[in-house]
Amino acid sequence: MKNNKFTIENIVEKRALFDNVPFYYELLKRSFDIIVSFTALVLLSSVFLTVAVFIKLDSGGPVLFRQKRNGFKGRVFEIYKFRSMVADAETKLVELEDRNQVSGFVFKVRNDPRVTRVGRVIRKTSIDELPQLINILKGDMSFVGPRPPIEKEVQQYESWHNLRLSVRPGLTGLWQVSGRNSIGFEDMCRMDLKYIRERCLLYDLKIILRTIPVLLGDSKAF
Image (cartoon, rainbow, N blue to C red; front, side):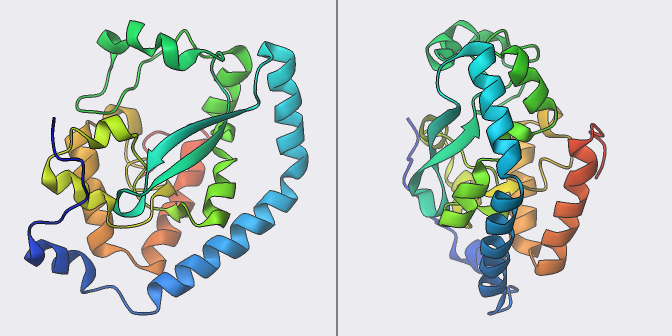
């Protein structure tokens, strides 16, 4: 088992990731996250209610899917999603592990049999991700950043993979708008490090805008 503790052994590389970030960047980014996530939660309250009703009518069980994830510096938090799979999806995962279509520690499978009818719709439009607005408002996540991994993935990380945990995880990011499921784990990590090195308010806004075509079905939007 690999070392799952967040460490950055190469101090030179760490400086390269952070030296070019203006001192006001994190303050403005966090302010943006709070204002926009709160506003979106208010405006989308009817959407939340409608999706909750459809999930209940389709498959019963809980409306929200909750899962422990590793965030900034490896801190554990609970991520929220609308449940798009059957209620016992986690226990059925072992039956599908040999069908994983992404290299590395990330699990993705096309036509996952655990996905419900409503789940297929809300996944295609990324509506299932909307409850993460709560994570953003709480400060667990940001609008833009690396996707938060689960603990068993982090336990297998090489030391350089941990660098992607050096910023707050995001609802969207460079990986999501650059091919998503067609990109392997190593390339995803390189994209995360590219974002961390080059991040700024304009870059964040560009990724957010590039996310819109992806939500509409354009997988080659970036």
